[in-house]
Length: 452
Image 1: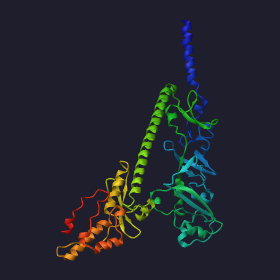
Image 2: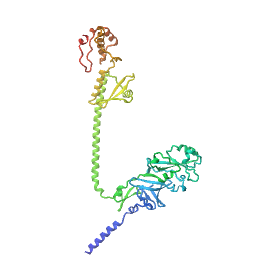
Image 3: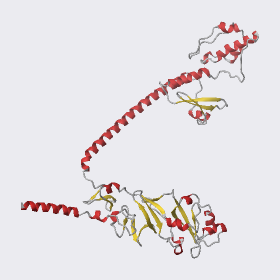
Image 4: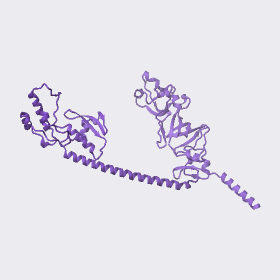
């Protein structure tokens, strides 16, 4: 019985000792402030109050007169607000004190940011131009930019987008010193309100918003840890009560590893199958495209007399890079084009070849029958009337027959110019009708229908 009591007391003491012995890094990185009530934690750390492992290098703060100070390059900035959720803080240049008679812009210096750590929002922030050593006499309309509160009144201030900036810098002459510092603009200032020597102090004291780039600390904090930095590996660490962890203080991640492995394996196999299917589809489409191309090429080679062939560059030129779209068909779009001789044409672009190029072949065949190079074009309307004389009627019929000969798709059947003239000068009864064209066409009319 006594032995059991000693064992129980030892167990309680062991658990109590474990609960009281926290990891040193966990204890060192508790959020602290400089007396202004603004708690400072990862990725920032206060040099006098935190260990350097509690924040990232370059995010060091120090306390001065009850305020947190961030030093950027050679400039000190007072931290007026810090928002960890949105990763930004509001800074005020420490060179400008609340009393304008004790400080002039000449104490402000240019800011050089480490873009790997910080960045300024350019939407609500504008550069304020501070010009010192401006002892020249400014024009009357530019004197408003001079700061009268400074001892020698050689300081000039204005926004970078002010229309008078060039005139002021030119008037100040050589020897001037120009400094740019970011300031946050209010609604009226953003809409064009002029900032000059009388109202600049309010803008400078307002400060500006500075965003930072760092690892998200939310997962570590939600697990009860405190974020920090490993100075040996230069990586993120989650300081927990027992010891530092990689990301979170929660344990039991090893049990989930098989599930993660199986999930990753399934995703990998699925990706491979999708890639293989896409390769097969692409190969199939390429083979069909090749067959269609061969069929079209063979058709154009065997029936090149149907229509003139143009290159793609020529088509782009005649359509002015497909500028004017005149219609939309079931298989493609129609564009307006102009040939080199000034004739207007309609250019149809097939969206894709279907059925081994049969759509394209049918289009060419149809156009070849109705728009041949030997078709005669009339500038005026031509018609046959019942009041024509017998001679005029006979000549019209001969012209129709000769015209049918001239538009034969087979060049062998087309008459020469001399032969065509002889046919027109000869007797109508001696003229024969041409054979049926190569492509399908309506049945040929009998001789009696023309000669009667």
